[in-house]
Image (cartoon, rainbow, N blue to C red; front, side, top):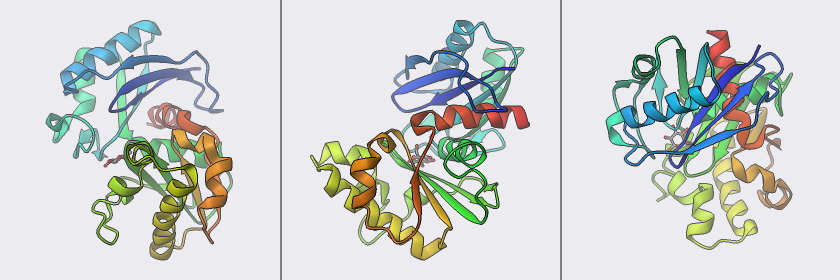
Length: 246
Ligand code: BGC
């Protein structure tokens, strides 16, 4: 059985068929640029294109870079503001009758995959997944159970409000930081989270997790931290799993 997982981001929308019982990717990835402005209807059209590409019928899991409570998107840090208060699952189901949609926060989805099959497999206690990208996303797990919609990238740290404007991966490029400089900054943020939550394990995620060899040793962290095993695909895998569980 393969389930369609879709990762909706501020610049790209990516889809893959996923075996939700192993976490394996069962297709080549298909990517479409995020329409601008990224309104719910415009994104729904892309979702339909994605579903047609895979000739797919069945449950669909979608990640979204914002707070999502019971299918309703409640924030919009890097997407069009008109998402706020929209029942995204209903919008998608209207555009694509016959498919059931499950929408969840992108970092929560990534964490679901890492906790079940990846870097935090079989780990008890408090696990915090942090994804570094355009923003900073977080997924908090207690003995494998997700506490959804933590927004730890929106903490205010010293005069950095929100802290993602200072420590997200995109800031590396914007400010021309070296890997070492950026990793030290990310480490300051992670140490702050460690003081607040004392997690048993951090999982370091997002596209930059591929550069772990340069980043890991420069974080300066006392807490245990491991790079995401699914790298940037974790969200797609977790979304397919969430759609299946529902
Ligand atoms: C959003 C989060 C999201 C993160 C990563 C933040 O700006 O508020 O909901 O998980 O970016 O995309």
